[in-house]
Length: 174
Image (tube, rainbow, N blue to C red; front, side, top):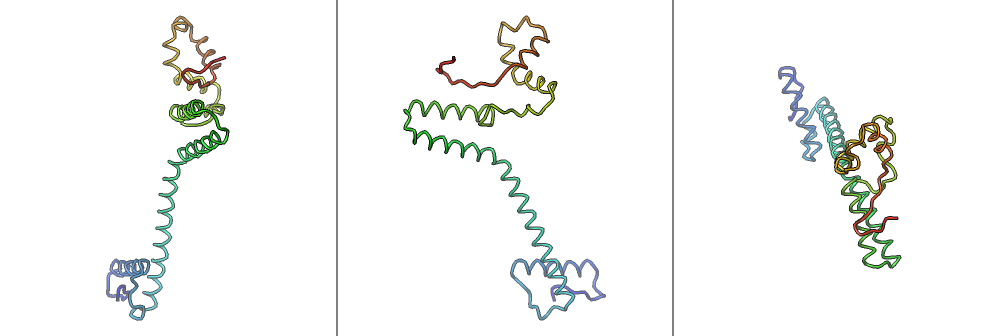
């Protein structure tokens, strides 16, 4: 038989045989059931059931990992599809359509989100918000000659007052 519970066989051989039989059950290559004793059948069924649960768990976890990495990109593609449909519905000019799509592409490439009204720092304490904003906007602040002579308190106040606003090249800012 595939697995045996005879006392003269070593324990590892008996359980490996039972595991093998359980695997065969799961794969659909079941051994002749008449050749198995009741204990062998029960062990094979138990191991096959355990193996099926383990495989389902592993496949589920891999699926969750894959979906988690694609969730934001899926939201972006869904939003772009909705925007394109809306632009066609409103019968806007091709130039305006292209400008709107460039806006969303920029938002996605720069911020990895489609809404600049809410920021991940909103839930952080003020001290951490300032530190994050200082790091994110350091290059823009350092390039501006107006801020070169400012003390650190003024820089903190300026960075705290910054709001993200996106403007496309050639756009009119009022």
